[in-house]
Image (tube, rainbow, N blue to C red):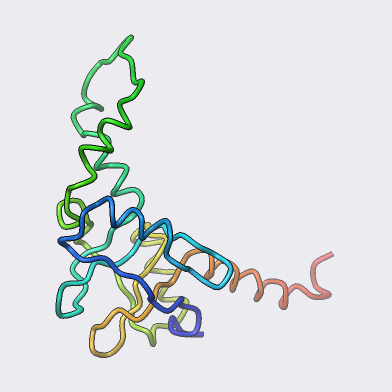
Length: 162
């Protein structure tokens, strides 16, 4: 099995100049399949369609939580209302300011074992799949790879495991 056989075709993408509030909305509403809505990350494409980054839910959480907060001894500090305040401030940031630019991709012809290797080696849960021209054509999700592995296990375990 190849990446192209298991990938979800790409229907939505982000642009570097897109405001974070719009990008977050797309993450919440993007169709992953016929029965699933919402994704945990999307590729960021420039005007020519070249992938220049990736934005995930984790990137958005990091944008809302200032890095200096983890360095402080907050003691009895109150957290009430902080997420809302920081979220409002982050809403107009551009995707390019917080996206991940060190992108791990796989070719559409990559064997599934190569995809698993990339997911484990680089600790990623989703892989953009690219065609021969370098265009992003789909996404390969950890969950879909897991389901394929369990299907193979089920077939191989018939009558063997008791």
